[in-house]
Length: 435
Ligand code: GUN
Ligand code: FE
Image 1 (cartoon, protein in one colour):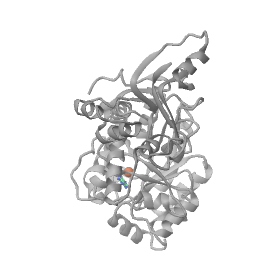
Image 2: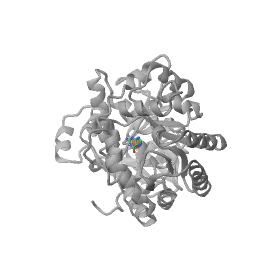
Image 3: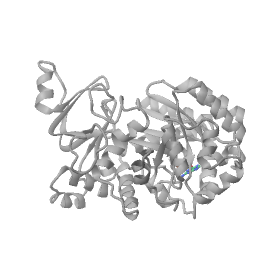
Image 4: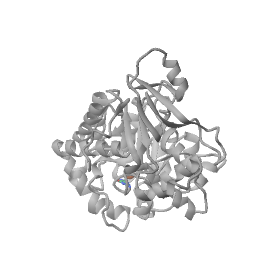
């Protein structure tokens, strides 16, 4: 039984006055049994419902207890790419990223980085992530083995790529198909693992490989699909030259049947109205990666244009490590807020916290399991401390509302604001060796 101030969203809030979009208890509790949340609400009520039953009580007051953060796009083999100095996406890929990913042919290297990866997720309060592994099956094996060991709900895929990259990073249409199938058979549904079909992007997949991805999507219609779309102007024109028959970048993926409600398209910064319509009609998700878009100079994500149009596009948020520059979803939403500021739009803290939790769960069609404190869901939680640093504590003296508190957490918070992370009901952060 965890005691603290609890916050859980039930839908996207309209604005800062919309207090019906979430449940907040100033003295709340979450009752956990066998890795699941079995009750949540006012402390006295949850306690009373327990009756004579025994429960270990952990008091997190005055901290906030929320569903764990969800990161819907990042690259596991790019932990040592973060902070690489480059002019733009394609230079960054060729100079730093592709050479680094070549190292994941070695299982021992992949296993070592997987340990660090999951430590960082837990340290930052992220309990579910949607990851790209490298082209090597060994990297996916290392990733899923570590996720299983920690009982974390993870979505990931072996990257499919068969051109425009170094030899050590290429598969073939057949290999990409066979190895993805092998990863699915070996890992999908094991523990809380989900396998995603992962053609990297149109530039690194031949039409033959796109057809192989399509075949996998047909055979495994329940699986997530992830790729990159419309991130950078040079990327868009290179793609157009490689797929001259396609109307636009989105149409490349549409031609191979890859649009749909389980597909996550990283970036989507420069989409045309036609492409937005196609995304909307198919229920595809545009994944906003703010720190990456700023770091690589890719552009400003038109969040409100996508969500506010007559045919709205589903949107999620993500770090995009290692193009992204922080593992923290708090830092990520701070940058998202600033991007909207530059675009003359507002992103209020209720919307931000909805997006990091339930919003991302909905984008993954996993809202029955994660992103919520609702009874029956996975007990994946984050405990946040608004006074985690001296500067935050000083500012916290003058905040007057929950919205103020969330906005302060977003503006100044990072892993230090994460007091604890619960994975399947077990405290996971305290056990980590300090950085
Ligand atoms: N497009 C294709 N691959 C990548 C990648 O690794 N990172 C980013 N940001 N964009 C990509
Ligand atoms: Fe990416």
